[in-house]
Length: 107
Image (cartoon, rainbow, N blue to C red; front, top):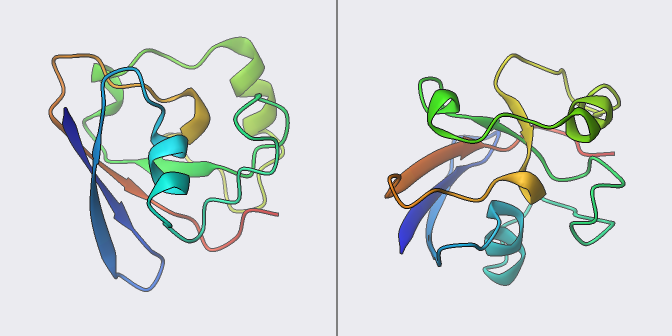
């Protein structure tokens, strides 16, 4: 089990536990984290679960696949080098904690 720290645009934060194999998006939805709309339910179809992954952690995660990269081109908030879709983020066993920043807008 790992811990995900969600930081809102206003600086407030919440920490939730995540089971292995659960996406960061699903952990947010199950725990009532605002700012993750997830309109498609994690089907990689909408880009409304955009987050900024903590700098330095990106190299520890599986790289984005072409479909995710394509959808990142249509996110509502500015795309950054550490932008990811949280529906595609599943933590490997080697990661016990991850911080993600939620952008100001999803759609």
